[in-house]
Image (tube, rainbow, N blue to C red):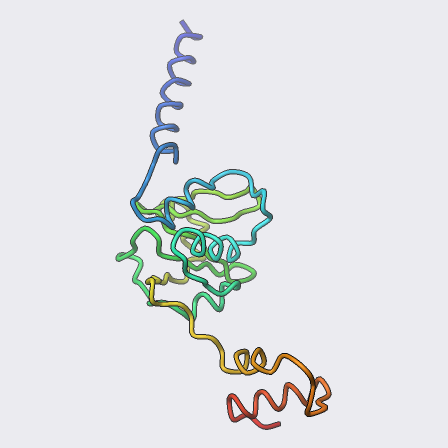
Length: 180
């Protein structure tokens, strides 16, 4: 009798687990769906923001910045109660981290255990370090920094004879009006 109860409990736990797992779930939002598909080992060695950058490039054709602090500066800020699948969530631990919201309080993020699905409404840890969310649209590709643009335009022969620091000084003076 005791063994039968244990089997029933295990069966019920499996039913609950598989009914709430990511198997065969889709949100209809390409970034959220791709994030859910990738839950498992972090075979690519992503950090959190690289994972978000990869998801957006692959699923939506949007080239986001690599670092979470730069991802946070583009897009439109979204209130927690207005989150939609595909929004990017930001968390402040020892550094700023980002993850993909997939709906119903859940998000996908890179952790030491791999690419993991977490429920923001249940996890006191993640809820405690949550700092906001942004929404990105197809036409919301980050504006390129003018200094970076000028530096790229100047690739080629060093006709001005710049030293490294002189080159940086010239780029910032010309593109941003900053003269050191």
